[in-house]
Image (cartoon, rainbow, N blue to C red; front, side, top):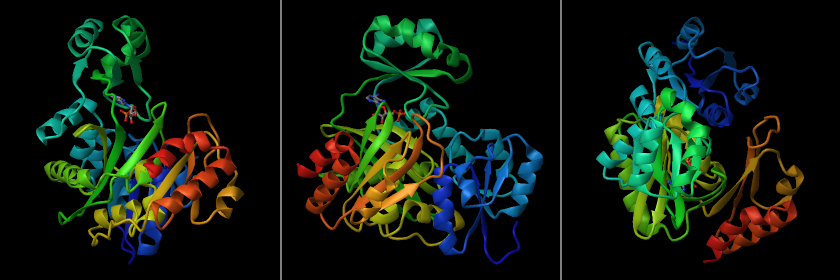
Length: 385
Ligand code: AMP
């Protein structure tokens, strides 16, 4: 426990989420200490970094002694590590919430308990069970690892029953260690996420719903507030609240939803700040990062209202021309300080405006300058509707 006047927030995982948490913590007078298994972790460029494995309990002991509260930048910290730390220091969200979100099957069961429907699914542990699941659910379907999947990794899409062999060749080796789940493929109308925050005192708030567009399972763009989502906001927020109260959740989380007609289906819950909430840094009265820091430290939560509409571009693999973004009006550049690598999230930009007409103009102009018009097309179309 720190004896300094300024509290210290410990963050497990040192990626861009930890980096943006540390940047949001500083003006609140909150210091941060990040743990990551790699000395290259990009949060280490803005906050002190302790390099340690998740089972290095000597290093974790030193970490626990230096921090007041522990939180996560990524949910795949081993559950035992989270439990071990929770015996020594306050950990938010609690390890139980983390454990549910680490397991797609537990997560889907929780959604059902809380009144949130999901795509049809069946647990699959053997090759025979895969055939049975295909017979039960039909095709198209997606085979996913129960654990450790993210950004479309650990997934295989089956267009026909004969794809079972290829799916098993791709993921069968993970069945024993992590378990698999076969999900019906949903031809959804759109994808939305609810970003929510719950304080230590139970205060609960949501930001306006965010519309999301993925490419190959990786978030490409977000738009907030999602157009024509006012009628869904109340239902989505109520579901998120039920989940949060059920888990006695503290901090920010994202609930990813598929919208099909009037139906809301739960895809997954991220027990942390989330990529689809990056727009809140400039586009909301209080960012997801600041409210997460406030929540886990027991401080009053800030207003989650949008200042106006915003669109976010994810930079995947490599950064585009920084000067072009900086030259655009109300466009905000975020470089995570990571080396370029195919498929890796290396930064993002958020474009804000006072109304959707101006946002459309700014986004179209910037996308054309950057040669990113195809990436922006669905968002431009949603803004025009
Ligand atoms: P996930 O890692 O489960 O969030 O999946 C990444 C993305 O793949 C989602 O945001 C969707 O765009 C797509 N996806 C995942 N599961 C399904 C599904 N059952 N039906 C249709 N698309 C899906």
